[in-house]
Length: 155
DNA sequence: GCCAACGTTGGC
DNA sequence: GCCAACGTTGGC
Image (cartoon, rainbow, N blue to C red; front, side, top):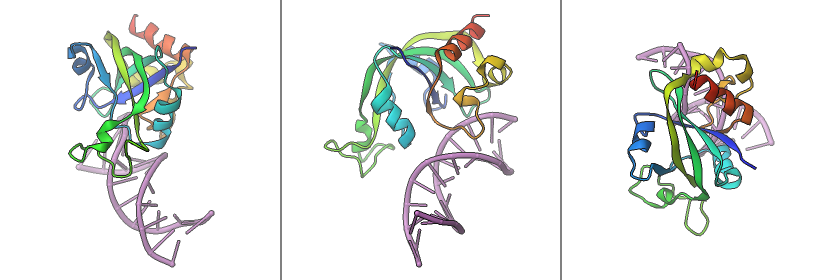
């Protein structure tokens, strides 16, 4: 059973081009420090799940690509490193607080699907992303929503 | 840069 | 357990 997700990133921090430039086009998704998102990463992400890669807090917020989960939830080791900006004293290798997954790029969309265009699409009304005050950085997406976004990307 | 909405912290 | 204060997110 494949799950569908949307993952937010600020392109100034890590963009779709950064992912595309990686030799394996793969990255660990470190630094999530929100419990609801943590629970999803730890408990619900499975290898093979599909991901909408979303640019937030930028000029044109949009889904800019798709990816696949290639490693399910495992402890975020950045939380153990005092030099990391993601360091968290309360997380330890014995009893990790924070988790991450690995994702691999599927495709960078030729034409990004903007937040604006998603708001205008009746079929996407229920998307978590579009709910008022929604700021979950890792969020579930329905298969139908995932397919609709891709349809919008491909004309 | 503004500000609404949300999550976390900590005093009581 | 309540809730005010604070910090962060993220669209605009």
